Amino acid sequence: MDLLHNIGVKLIWVAVLGDWLNLVLKWVLFGERLYWWQFSIACETGPGSPSGHAMGSAGVGYVMVTSETSKENHCFNITHLRVTSAFRCLQLMLWMLLGLVELLVCMSRVYLAAHFPHQVISGVISGIIVAEIFSRVQWIYSASLKKYVCVTLYLLFFAVGLYVLLKAVGVDLLWILAKAQKWCISPDWVLLDSTPFASLLRNMGTLFGLGLGLHLSGYNETAGRKHSSSISIRTGCIGVSLVLLQLLDKMTSSSSNQLLFYLLSFCKSAVALVLPTALVPGVICWISSKSKHEKDM
Ligand SMILES: O=P(O)(O)OC[C@H]1O[C@@H](O)[C@H](O)[C@@H](O)[C@@H]1O
Image (cartoon, rainbow, N blue to C red; front, side):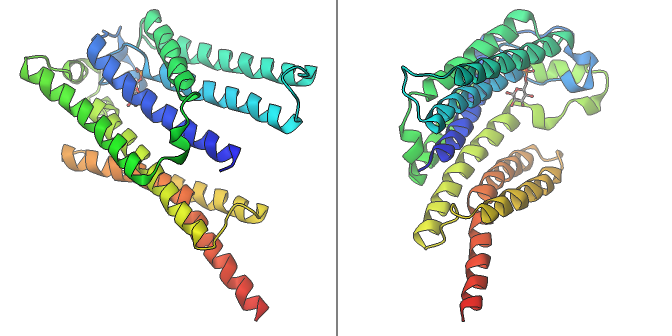
């Protein structure tokens, strides 16, 4: 397993678990929002505390900066005692960049009146905590498909169970959805894909897709199609994956049937991970090895 592979895996785990935790915290904390219904991009259907935008960007940004600085450490081949000034400068610049990005994200959410200041600050802090916890977790890099399926099901049933349990005792966790439907200036602004269950299914699809993609790419490698060596093959995989992901992103499903919408949301997110991790590299390597074989004959 190389370093870049591990960084990619950690990024997705932090993004998914961070967003899942954001959903649970929002349900538990019941955070009110300000006047979020006055802008289309801020007409959110989930409670306000902690901010999902602040939490997600902080968690993912923290992983990127810490991984990049340790990767540079690896590239420069330097010991802890002999850290060069260029390396320190790079570290400082990356941390400053992350600070600036977070400042802009938080200010924009408060400016749009989607959040109170304490909600964006708690979002940044909780995002960093999630990322820091995952920097100590090692089993994610070698988790089997079975483990991915178990974690996906556990997270899904935990969130749905919490919703059903609280509903049974008279607490409606979707209270802010009704508010959005009542107050957002245009009904078109209330998008089904911003609802808590759409976000839950999207995250579960992403985690399952990652597990499936890694499992299939492991199968590709044992089948002799090693797709990590050639730069041209890697570039081809990135290019084709980006085009296919753009096409996938453009696919929308009708929101008239909510259950079907959530199911398709799960499938779309899973496919978005299987494509670049297994399908595209597998097919490109198969084509290239076939043409090489034909040339040799
Ligand atoms: O809490 P915020 O900053 O308004 O963010 C809301 C977003 O939070 C994310 O966690 C969800 O995945 C999105 O579906 C949702 O739109």
